[in-house]
Amino acid sequence: MKNRFRFLLLLVSGTLNLLLNAQTRIKFEGLTIKDETAFFKGKPFNGVSVSTYDDQTMREEVWWKNGLIDGVKTEYYQGAGVHARITFKENQRYGGFTYYYRNGQSKLKGTYVRNVLQDTLWCWYQNGNLQYLHIYDQGVRTGRILTWFNNGAPEQVCQLVGGKPHGAMYNYYADSSIRSIIHYNRGVREGSAYQWHNTGCMAEEAYYKNGMQDSAHRVYDNLRCQLIKSGYYRKGAKEGVFMQFDFLGDSLTLETWRNNQRNGPYISWLNGKREIEGAYQNGKPHGYWIYGKESHYQWREGEYDEGIQIGTWWYYDSQGRKLMKQVFDDNGNLLEEKIFKKI
Image (tube, rainbow, N blue to C red; front, side, top):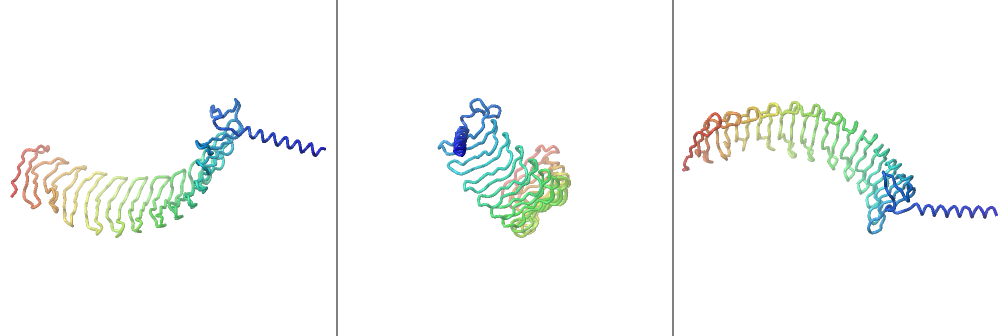
């Protein structure tokens, strides 16, 4: 008799629990949200809310306690498949979370503590290969950062301090060949910065101090590993002679800089011969200049006074015959112009 009574009690208790659980699973539209708290029939809601897409497939399932999101919030792709599972505590993301691709493969997985990321964050490509691995300390990325290409080859390796790169940052091409090695001091470039072409040739070398280029700067072509640009920086400003070369190593241009302004000789070459020749002062053409000396394109010559044409200027055709003569005063005003007849 006692056993039968106990059985009936358990049966009734189980039925009541089922009824209570059925009552706590409602449509999200049935809730009233006030001051970030959900109410149902005037009381803070305890249970599960669900929402659906227009086609009535599941959109979202949320667990509530005392009117606050508390438990697992599950988001779904339209039609089928879980998009995300996120753990909450009293309306804050607190605990593990996972995002998924439509094929069910995990996309992103990590942990929140009071709405900020904590510990390891994992991210995968859709094929299951790791994309990156980041470590967080109270929402700030720290420690070793690893990133991979879709094919599983490493893409980037660096160390972070306070969310900023510190020490050498290594970057790679998808075939695992080195792309760059750049040194940082808490997010500021400091020391050498080397880059390579995917052919294996050096692409660029530079040196930094307190985030500014300071020392030699060189650029190389991707086939012959030939130097094509060179110059020098001091505290981030161009200083001294800057050269450009073609892929055979022949000079193309020479510029002289002082404190980030062109100041001094300027020469450009064409077919190994001087095409343009002159000088700058305080960033402006100054002194005698000649243009088109080799190509004879817009061939002309004359004098500047800090960017202002002065004195006599001569203009020639492609055969070296005079086309025009202009005379300017010291303020750049045109005083005389004579056009020569073509032969």
